[in-house]
Length: 293
Image (cartoon, rainbow, N blue to C red):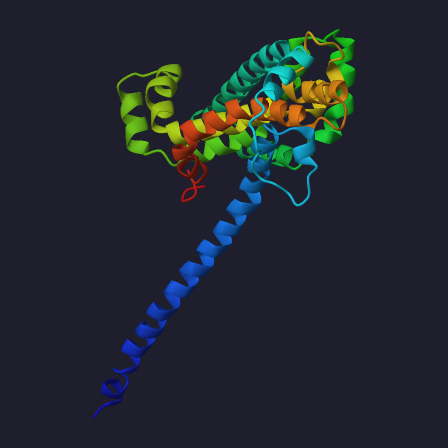
């Protein structure tokens, strides 16, 4: 009997060991995932249930997760205690305008970096990547000084313009554009398609998952932004919802957490609905361009 024949039974044993280890690894992965979901979801569940409780129920020990009676009055009180409707309109305007500008800037920058020939293109891309390393807090003072000099305090453009350029969006869309089949791009060029035509009719439809992901990240960031709108607004006419929640807490007092939680629930509901609509594109969009670089 040869050496190769003696070693044959070892292979099935190794395969059996691998198969036996797979269920354990799968169960461990699901356990970690379940723990992460619990950590993320429990605060949201508490917020939603607390928004329907009285003050006494919120402070009751042991903790009661569900209210004895649903106090929908908290939502009406949150809506009327501060100009919530005005804050909501301001958030919609700044989010739509800011996200739209970010999408346009990110897509056009990425298209230029991939499809337009010009010198030092890789060096410019390095500067874009370097911008990802700069924290937003570092630029707050220069941005505020510029906005104040332009007279944009308490204006929509003062909230929107400083955040219109985004390095992450340019990076994400560039990686997606690099992964597109070159045959389709070359065929469009041979047919005489210009840059705008090729971008609108070919590149963007083929990049929909990454584009939706970019839009969702931008919308959530703009909708939840608190620090910059707090700095550049000091009246109700231009305050956004996150800043308005602070006013709601001050108007109701620190003990009326049911009303504050109701206001917070109304703030996060729009972005949750947008996320549920777009979540099927997120994984595909974030992994776009991971093969080519």
